[in-house]
Each structure stands twice: as structure tokens, then as C-alpha cells.
Image 1: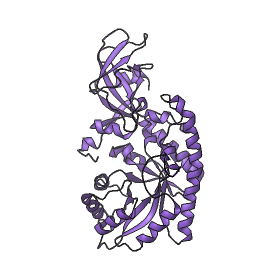
Image 2: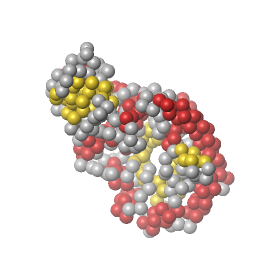
Image 3: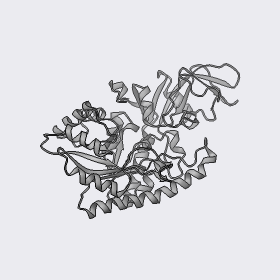
Length: 400
């Protein structure tokens, strides 16, 4: 859509507003599905809910096309909430030992829901086992295996710090020790390659680092595939069956899709394509999510100031975590202020006319975090608002 089309659409809409272009969203959904289906390995795509946080959009992905199946949740309470809305096949991807969380997971399991929890240590498994004692059928757990690159006895670490389980030997020891635990059974593995999925390699804000990032990603892809294959083979050789072997993320699906030992891939940000995902050499996605602010004043010629906009993304601080002006084109943030909580000044090109009340569209750096600032997303198709979809926040939910 052009700026004039967006401006017409927003003329009676209260700003700030969050918007999803459903036509672009659906094309991104199909693009990822086609990528997986073309490989013909029978893998499925598990939707990472933290990247959407809007039940209507989660449902839209799941009912779209194969191979989408199952949800990757970021909190036990979120899994319980989604289960209450009819969703099933819930993988809670972050460990928890909080009694209220484990009780909620037990209740889901006892109600017949397919729910699993990621763990990353024998201690965590013991806590889970104690919480699940007395169940008629064991609660299912998935073991997180660290896929970061390490050297010099751990003094060099490339990736994120997720799990102390790193080798096929580590995995085998935990699977063997779990045989003695009651109420819980290990049914799979998660092996997320953050230094591939989460590392941009054509980032305009870090141009000098892009060659190094490309090298890290290239080396990681091959080493990770080899390690995951070794782990899968070691488990098979020792008679351990795994139902789930999860890998990948939006930034690495195009590589992980070639690994036949992976049963499923995870993705979420791909559908909305926030601006960080423009900076991957292996991705071809369309921007599908925006927020609109109103212009409220102009301090000087060539400047316009919007109300609000300080939706800074998590992670290592930097300009790539700041929202980017999208439409009208060629607007630029003011370096001394960036995006502020109550105002965002912009440099405006001489041929662009913005006046008080004019909307400006921005793209967030990440996908799901924008939903924490809005009660609803306006879903747009064919140039019209076709639905107002409540976010978790709009439904009164806050999980982290």
C-alpha cells in the first residue's frame, strides 16, 4: 500500500495504532510453508507465539496451510491461556520450576492437552518429576541442547547462553538418568542455533561487522548440522526414541530445513517481518506489521514531531533495535533523540509535506514486543480494516 492509501485508511482512526497488512502476512505464511514443503522431508513448522501474541493471528497461521502444526509458547501461563481458547500441542520453550507454573502444566496434562516443557538440566527434571508424581501417564519433557560455538575452554562464546547440555554424551547421560524419575519422560530435543537465527549479516547499522557475521553463520550452519546429526544418531544407537527434534528460527529455517533428523522447525517473526529481518542475506519476506503515529508539531523547517513511539526492542542496545520510519519514504530519526516515549522527532525531506494530524508509519525492530504496547491490532486487507484483533494485553494477559 502507498502512503496515500494508508493516510486515507487512517483518517478516522485514533493514533497511535498498530496495523497488520493481512495480504503481506498471508504471503509470508505461504512463503515459509513452501520453503519447507519443497525439501520433502516431512518436517512441520511450529509457530513461535511470542512473535505474534494475538490469538486471531495465531489461529490464522495454523489454519492456513500445511505444514503448520503446534505452538511454541514462552511461558507456562501463556500455554494455559491458549489452551483455554482451544489451542493444543503446546511446547513451553523456556524452563520453569515455579510451583504455580508446574501446577498449571499438570492440570493441562490431566485435562488431555498435549503439552510439553523444555528443560536443560537433571535438577530441573527432578523438580518436574516431583511436581508430576501420581500422574497416570508421564508428563512429557524436551531437553534443550546448547548450539552455540565455543572455543578456548569456553572463553570464546558465540551464540546465546541457553543450556549447559552441549554434547551427545551430555544428552545420553541425562536420558539415562531420567529413566529413574517418575511422572516425567523425555520425548525430544530442542537445539536452537541463535548465532544463525538471531545474527543479521547485512545490517546497515553495523556494516563493519557484517563480514564477520557472515563467517560466523556459515561456519555455524555446518557445525550445528553435524552436531545435531551426531546427537540423533547417539540416541538411536542407545535405543532412545525421540518424538520431537526442534531446531531453527525465522533467520535459520532456510538452512535447518535440509536436516532430515529435525522433525520440526520453529518460526514466528517471519509472518510480520519487523525491520531486523530485512538484514538477513537468506530471507525474502514482506513487511506486514506497522504502527502509526500522528504528527503533532514542527519545531523547525524540515522537522516534524510525532506523539509517542518509544517502542524499543529487547536485546543488545543499538540503533537496529529502534523503530524505523517507513512511510512517507526518506524520513529519518533525529540521532540526539531517537524514538521517545512521548515524542519522536523526524527529519523530513523538502518534497514531503507533513502537518499536524498526518500519520507516519513505523516498523518495529522485533515482532511480538509491539503487542505489549497495544490492546488491539487493526487487520487490513484490500486497503480496508477488516477486523480488530485483541492482543494478549487487550485480553488482560501479561506473562513476562
